[in-house]
Image (tube, rainbow over all chains, first blue to last red; front, side):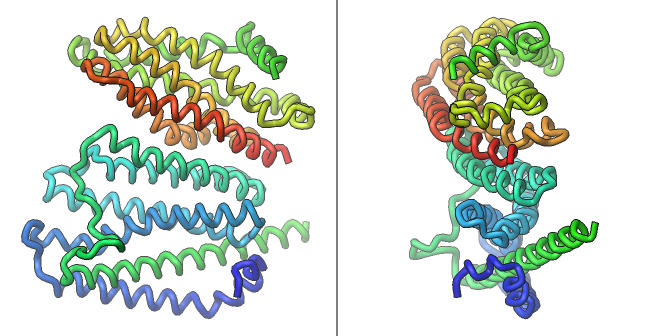
Length: 240
Length: 218
């Protein structure tokens, strides 16, 4: 199996048709288990009280907001190098999901920030770079929406995604230079011995898995919709 | 390339080129700031570096859609694309022309407008140097935005949405340099980073812009 086979939209549709409901089902199961477990069966954290429970939405959505952009970057590169049509459409399908994830992370962060920091919003480096990421998503989607010809749109948005990634990264570190942070450092990472305490860690992992699966399902669904709408416009163009 | 540069400069500076518009816009924004926040000198001095930078950014943005739009309309852009000169050089010449007609005048005018906002005496040099080092990146990034949106209706509004987030690092370092200057701190780090952004933009962005132009002219 190689991803190049799936440059054929028909093959992509045929393969993903049975997969989508399963992935949706799994995502739903993981989210239900993770969120219910997190909300009702974990103790309150000592410094945070019960506000800690928002972590089960905040952290996974923030994670997906960044990873969605990374996925768009990879998909754009694949499109630019190999003219892999499905890849370009997948990048497009990922953008609105990433946008919403960024928004969820920002909003849940504000709701969490109000009791913990006493403010809904602070010009903290992490918060600010998420806001900038949100603007990048907006610009990317606006460019997709503005161009009629699909191949031109795919090309231009891919270039924008590449250049935007560099500048998004640059902004991420530039804002460190510009303000001191309120936000705590990374709570999860693969290369550390200790993460969050296990009581919170396990339901959090399940929620993250749920968000990843949900993202995957939505992207597949969006890509299939894009392929079909392309097909329809091709049929209309042929029929005159 | 030189011929193209002088042609663009001539087009921009002669009648109907809108050469002074960017500067006038810069002046108006700076004049509006005290109306917005009140005439208190201490407050104005505090926000002066940031206001000057934001206004310069917006003034540079204003003239971006002229870079390719007129040439695209009368077809000379297609001629340039088929000319022996590589499109990357065309883009570079266009960005240079934009910088000479917008970035340089803004840089020269900024200290004068600093007086209006009671800018601290020590901040003039970092502000001037920062604009001198930072405005090339504004022109280069703007050229990229203009190349992306050249064929579009209502491209101007979309372009500002695309370009302004890309201006964030330049703005942060530029305003930081002026702010540190005002506070009497060392300004070399932000100025070096500004220069680095401009140099990197100079090295990489013409290729991205030329690619976008080729796609748009396809």
